[in-house]
Length: 483
Image (cartoon, rainbow, N blue to C red):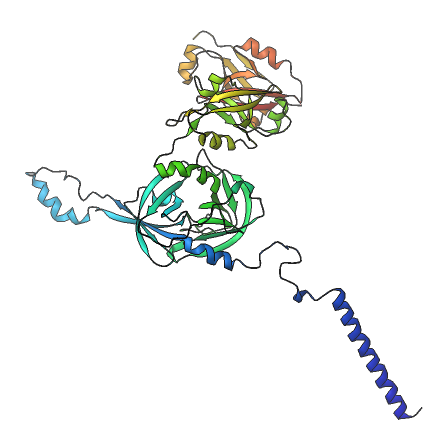
């Protein structure tokens, strides 16, 4: 073979190889297109929005900046501590008058959002509470003086209004009940007075209680909520308000991805009353507690849903209707009670005077009661002492008038917990000295003899249900007998 033939053969092999590579690459492309030709979110999150820009453009004109001024009184106008003829008066005024604290204006920033074209704006109560002056600035820089229409400190909601504003764009109020953990949310606010800013994240949790009050029921989100965002809207991906941004958990003052918003359904329920300037709440007349797994077993419940009635207020609506301690409320006015903290809000939102059906589970059986809701007003809610020690780790004594006086107990008879051993079953259950024992496994115990007979029936590994009274309130606790 000549050199020329060898060269042609090598060229043919190279060309053939390149053709194979090109064809193979093309086939692979057809079978599995290159990832860069795909949408950013199509692989793992097909429902994730590619951008929130259109949502932000549409919602931002409805979000307003709120600036408040509160005059804090100093001592400058207070009476002088000297009479007109006192020889020290001139001396005091000459040297100390200019150093006395005077009135000053305390300023703060917040956010709100327009809910109708009439000029009503929803925000947090703590944004406008005790304000002497409220200014609202719209996104187009127009500024108006606002007045408070209605406030509700218990839910931290407030309704304010502006007059004379035209071309207002209200936000649509969504349904926070259908919100799911993991849903996309967008927060719009005015942090640090810099103008509207937009942050996005997801719903981290629902039904959060942070100790803000009796009606805690917050939506938790990792969308940044910074100082000044309070009162701003939390939107779903459709641009509907599903929450009112209210608080953050932070040790340094900035967002750490734990923010809280009031569910919008709570605001929607209160709006008619806020527009009237006063919130009137319904009252059922019970004290409730969460159902633990041990309580579930002792009360013969299928699950931990519902609200356990720890006490019934004397002469209250519940007592009049026949509810008792130990009942588990599973439905109120047709609404299923899944979480304990749902009940206070549902009751509070019920019109006063309305008769509602309350379903309970009592000793394993479902019962129904008709309760007429009333108005919530204010904040309702020496002979030898025989002693008994138990393997539960607590010491009880019979209450005498003298013992009640010495220990400042509200009751003059019955049983009181005198001592609780460290690391004992009673201590782990939360029983404390001074607790008054009312029942053991829903049987009343009034003296040492009854208590001893009852406790002797339990064996190692059993769980004992106690009803105790503590600082005027009753509470169910479960204690497991040591094995």
